[in-house]
Image 1 (cartoon, rainbow, N blue to C red):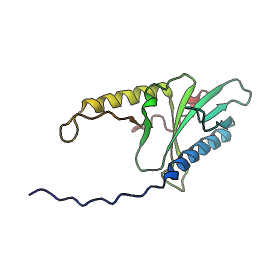
Image 2: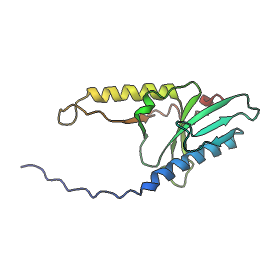
Image 3: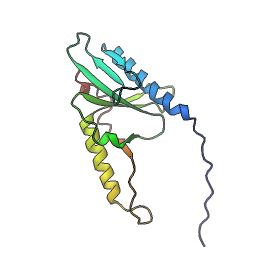
Image 4: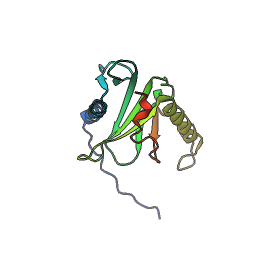
Length: 161
């Protein structure tokens, strides 16, 4: 006899919450950089791919930062397919985990070329792997980044500042 499943209630998600989560992550990263003695400037919202421009106080080195923030359990961040090709020596991702509301966020600092390589590889593997019922996966614009071994956790030196 086929197993019957309870229909899950769809959770209502406040559409503004994702924007607030992203903004919170940008401010947290800016604050951390300022605490370390760097200049951190949030960019205008129409600046594609760069959320923060950070520099040494003497202006001798600058880095562009793309911030991705999550507030759910697990070590997985969702990106879009632009991550596969968004590569530049002067662009670094900072993945922010604000899951624990009352604790200091966790920061994962990763060069853009490593994110691109990871997302492309993971997506290609996913497309080659059959789905649960043996079907081919359909393409999607979603990509995932994960740091299961915490290799990039608090690795601020990768900013090169």
